[in-house]
Length: 197
Image (cartoon, rainbow, N blue to C red; front, side):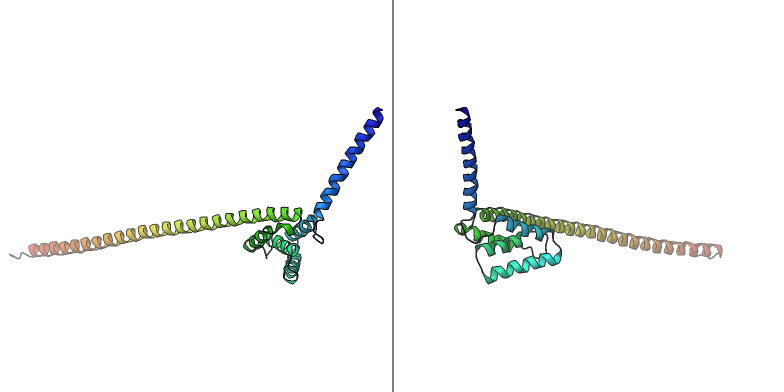
């Protein structure tokens, strides 16, 4: 009796597991001809780690397919290629636009495609925000540097003007001293020559 209960329980677990796998496979296959998630992921992996020639080939193929036969799968593939960083054709703004458009028509996508589009849209949006912050910080840094350079230039100009004024004062003082020396010499010469003036 106990053996029969264990066999039925084991059978139920096997049946339950089989049903879960079958349901998951069925959900994935609800759209005929849709690539699997692993197809997209494999291409993104090749794109991220490939040489420039491989990257260019993947980009050209994805772009061409999206233009030739526009559809959910080809547009998602192209959007994911654009969203993948590390190659010359990465374009976060265009990827964001395509991914938003795709996610507005999720009834034409498999659950895996929806997940990939959602994840990469969030990633692209985050990169765009970080890029905007970086540009803002660079601008502020440039502005601060420019302001500091202008202040330093003003200080240098003030110091140079003060130096010029001091040089002029020194030249005037030397000129007056020279004039006094001339007068004193003239007076000495007159007194030594016995001039009664």
